[in-house]
Image (cartoon, rainbow, N blue to C red; front, top):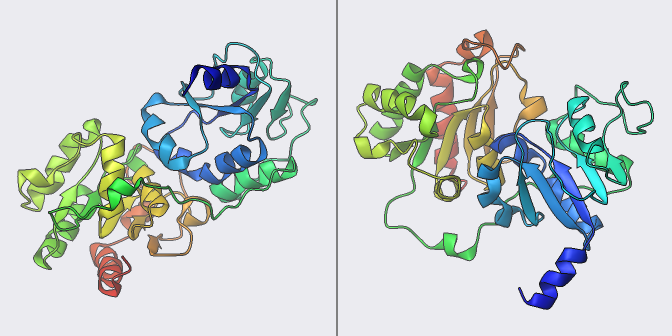
Length: 322
């Protein structure tokens, strides 16, 4: 960027968008972020979100800067932005944080604590992607809920030497959404016996869980990639995988965004609210709803058996949707 271009950027009006949540939460607002980019091409869009998500911004193509924010705020925006957009939640914390930025215009849902804010009502039965597209629609900004795909750089299209793996991702932020490791292991055994390369992914905090699954499945140590892949490398791995098997967590949304077939195990939350759209994805759910932040595996999640998961996996692998 030239000096003149930097000067223009410095004078551009700023839009601050709050989404201080995790990987899956970010991917659910990609259509909304792109809609904001299209509707405000002259603004500098600053996303208030965890800094660890920054590697995905080039694949989204709508954000100019990431402001490191976890949770509903505070949002240290510096000079008052021209527009603040609440893609975080219904409030009141997120609404308060954005009002404190001094933004001239605030786009958010209505909340009884803020009678002067004229936003749409919060719908608890709306799919998470649709929720934020509908919010912007009420403010005259058209967003396409189907615009979820990430745009990998051309260099990712090179054919790697190793065969495309099946990814087994046993972790999730809360125990309520974690299928038992023994069942993940049995699934991995069957897939490896069928001739598929299986790798176990997760973050650094899930390394022990991944190692347990690999040990139960008698997988070699090289199969455990948990804690060894940054977000960008994980995205590239998912992009070339034959299949992803996981719970209701961020990697499931990454598979959707990269058009990688997936089998996603839902427990306390219906896939009608957080599940993948139609396509090469199978969402398994026993029909129960519960506490997604519970401290033990959800009873509905435990109703999903290994055979059910394997049947879905084999069907996707045999169809060859890749």
